[in-house]
Length: 110
Image (cartoon, rainbow, N blue to C red; front, side, top):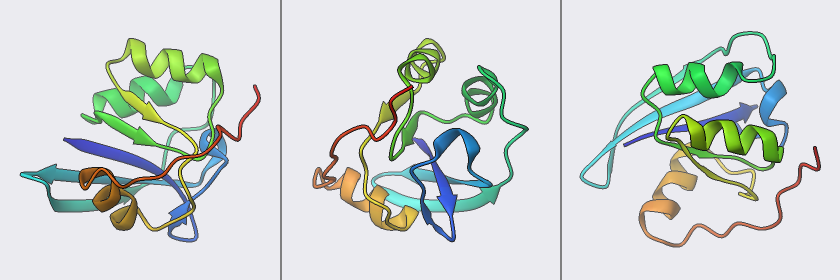
């Protein structure tokens, strides 16, 4: 499994499409195996879903995301979780793997 988490100052940011970097985290056997931080291409509609798909991402954990973007991710075979708290990537993924990740409202309205 490979996760993508949009970051600001090392923690999840609510501004998914305009984030400066993503944490890409590989998980095997419910253990974090590798984490890298990458800079995304310039934000344009439809670019990030294809880019993350090409990097092998299966799951995106986000604070908020527009419905069109969610649909584009799903078309690329990527599961999207919105409403996640602004925690560090490792904490979010460990909570997800332990079925304890609490998500709230999708904080994006476009």
